[in-house]
Length: 623
Image 1 (cartoon, rainbow, N blue to C red):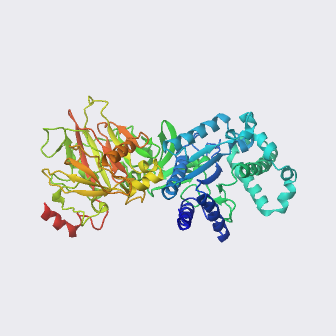
Image 2 (image 1 turned 90 degrees about the horizontal axis):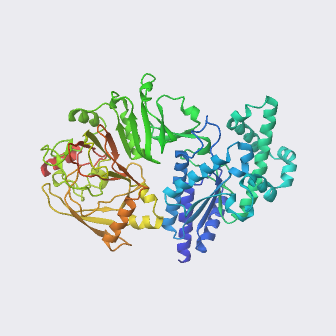
Image 3 (image 1 turned 135 degrees about the horizontal axis):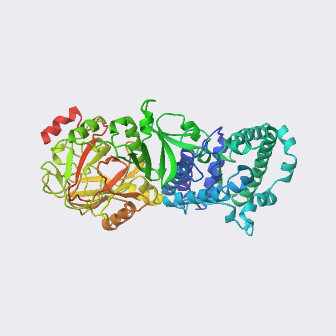
């Protein structure tokens, strides 16, 4: 690299950090200059960009605030945000990033009344989350136990050892006098007292009023003294790192504040509970008890642990009905199942806008245990309220059955390739790539309803749905960039519907969420349980990095079938499944026995959709 390329890398990395992580509160030009100087130091030496964030100690003991002592979707969303930033820097800077999260539990352990075992459960949970995003080599959860200065010291003694080895005795001894001479220090002290009075309210309730006030003063002073010792330790061990902070600091080049969540406030997942508001489509960060004051709130579990809350639209009269619904996620932020304990509960109870946002956020939503749909007309009537339906020659609803069944059903005798819905529109739809872009004709959602299900199906034959956004996150940023610049050409064989060849980039930006998502149609398979598709051959149309398509497809298959990004599932009779067609890929086994699925697709929200009235004439002529 020459100096121009070095400076270009400095500018790009600075932009990524400022746009994705750093809060820029009370920013100064001096702070920007110092940030770039830090980055320039790494870039010119071709070293990893080093970031340090002291945070993630443990969940508070206050269950009015949190769901439990294990990390949940709050921590996951923050770590996923960090991994996204890491991948973006990797994409433009080959040495990459070392992002250190220093868990500061032991720094404050004597004041927060959280069991040591709970801290380790929490830390192990964080590491598991990072591992499931394949980022353990770049995002490192560390603690005092990882440093030689604490070798031979019991973890129960880290608190005292930190103060003894790195504390500022003058600061501690003269604390009261210093506090009265420094407004910032005094405000920090008063703020800590107020915060701890709320956070430790159940612990402090055991004290008399006078003793409680004394204990609060001890906590606030002690935490500031310990914070000083931690700063000294981190400055010694991580002197070269760009120092991040969960607290508000002026951006003058010392500590760079960051918002952990999308909202511009300094909130943390270890003192809060996440609730997804299905009406607005946003995660709300607040105390657990505050969320529960709202109507229509139901808990969500993941791996049998409390994970988050979802707020569904409901009047005070209908809210009790929603308590019959249990919710769980199949992956950390993917594959939502809403299961009714009452088989007479109609799916019309669920607000259509809520379902739109749930599908957009969680990729797939399965409605299970609700009142059955006995006729296709019921499915058509309900689903058409979600939007305009993609028309096929056989109608809006496609009955999918095993061979030699209904005449208007798509027949399938083979397991499916990996693909997305309407990857290959039939000629009669009049969809040509010269006129219509991907987002013009690709359904943003499709639905499957299991009308009949043969319980004797092979239990080893499972369907697969792939989180195609996460698929791009678990790979190194350099590899993702190569895939993003690669387009595949799909050469199609003629069939009874008529087909044309088409070309798609491997990674595109989702039209709905603006996230990058993987688009791939696995080659060499015939038959399709959802749409009639011809066999096809795949070749590399454009790529700066790949020349052998067979090797590339083998790598894509490895990514897609990674258990971290794909869910294997079996359909239960009566299941109604909604899929985000932009952020998922699917592979379904062929039906057999006495099975029947009903399949419908929503038209995209595009002004240039082939089903717009001014384009529909051409479509009719093509048919």
